[in-house]
Image 1 (cartoon, rainbow, N blue to C red):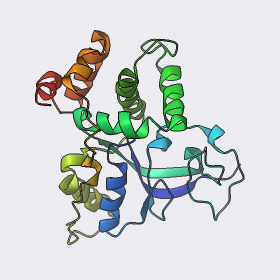
Image 2 (image 1 turned 135 degrees about the horizontal axis):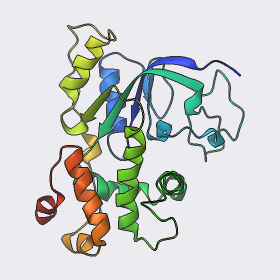
Image 3 (image 1 turned 30 degrees about the vertical axis):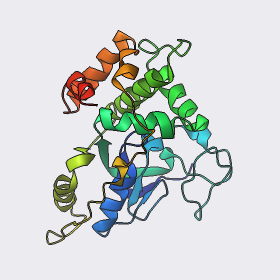
Image 4 (image 1 turned 90 degrees about the horizontal axis):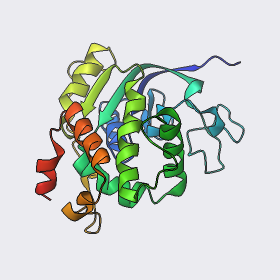
Length: 234
């Protein structure tokens, strides 16, 4: 078996929660960290939250970069690498959920892949056979995909809305950049959403109570506070 390749940084999170922004942020410091493709210094990619070698459906080699497992192209899997530093990026659920529901989860392969893993790992909390609504599935995948990450080694956890200085200080501490480097890149394009990408108060009112309780708990755990006051502001 080949030895895993060494990389400095892995950024994990849930889709639509800022992994693309994190890659650009790290690039602005001069690091070669790709978004969903392997760079010299690492990768920012939600899919590496799981160790799923079944992704490797086609041959891989030195010229391969990361590509989604359902694309039919060469792919790397998490076990191909040893990452020295793992950064976990989180985003306010009330802002992330519209993008997850209306943009990410319409990609069936992406939703099915995440749903398979969270229901397998957390069968005592999520039933793969339950008649969850689309919004409830979006909430549960957001929560439990992140819980999968929490169970792993993490060297830094950041809120993407205000992460720049903490990331810079972390990179300096790890000797990955010089102290004089300062990032001015703050293109928060992960916040973009169209007018149709709105989850209303009425939508949340239809979510079963147990799922809303989990969403509220998750929002508090990661530092964004009670979800109900935020819903009232929609």
